[in-house]
Image 1 (cartoon, rainbow, N blue to C red):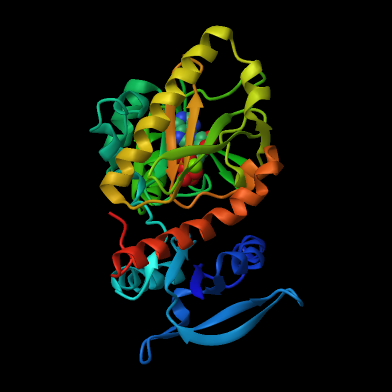
Image 2 (tube, rainbow, N blue to C red):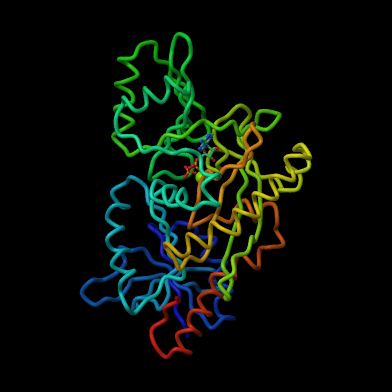
Length: 363
Ligand SMILES: Nc1ncnc2c1ncn2[C@@H]1O[C@H](COP(=O)(O)OP(=O)(O)O)[C@@H](O)[C@H]1O
Ligand SMILES: [Mg+2]
């Protein structure tokens, strides 16, 4: 039996998802275990793990060799556990007796810079600058009057800030969980002090794209893509995430609703519909292939795109460890596919290894 390890930073993370995989694993000849990078025993190169017991729906403690395949669902933050886990995961990626069923992407800055190099993709990437000094923010804002700051290592909309230069003051808008917060600065000194605090983390600056629909809800489109065994990328599902009225974020963690793509699409002007479909086609035919070549082998991607008020389509964000929530919400019939594809991928990599008679490595 093949062992697939579901790896996350805590044993509670995505428990339901890992259980859905675990119950389906045996029909693919797979035993699914879950573990964290901290569960690896360096002396013996074994791992303390949890194995699913279908009859009782319990996860039972076990100890076994590092699994043959790893499904990496580690989401790193600024916390110390994340920092401790990273070198262990880097080591695991090089460990010859295991294979990740999909690689992750580097930080936003690296990915966006790379995508800007590609002539087809470049027009969809908002101008992005890495900022490290207050003066850069100040001069950008003086010129453009509005901008978005977002962390290089961000996720879930955390740390995303809208800056607006008014006649008398500068306002900063951001979310803490579901709550929208606004800070106002009436003089440059207080704004500078605040920016310096923000810049203790690495940040990017982008133009503020007006992504609100006609009822003032910020929206983005999640394209959930997966690679099949022939190396072709498919759009498994599309969902529109709609944030709070007059809000800034469309992320689910910011309290968004999910709409079907078709419902949302019917409500945009006909002319924009044509452009949008064309652009979605170009994006899905280029971005995953390019990223796969640069950083792969990748397995699945969540591409977040938006339709801005000016009628243009932009790529906002690319996730190499996409969640399934929004797609499951709008397309419940895709459940079986979504909960079996990591298993199919694992089995496919195993068959490749057997064909070659060597270690499983996809070209
Ligand atoms: N340039 C932008 N203009 C307007 N809104 C933006 C911009 N960039 C991000 N956002 C908003 O912030 C949210 C989170 O940004 P994103 O780049 O996806 O980072 P994260 O990794 O935190 O999800 C987006 O879903 C969108 O609602
Ligand atoms: Mg995002």
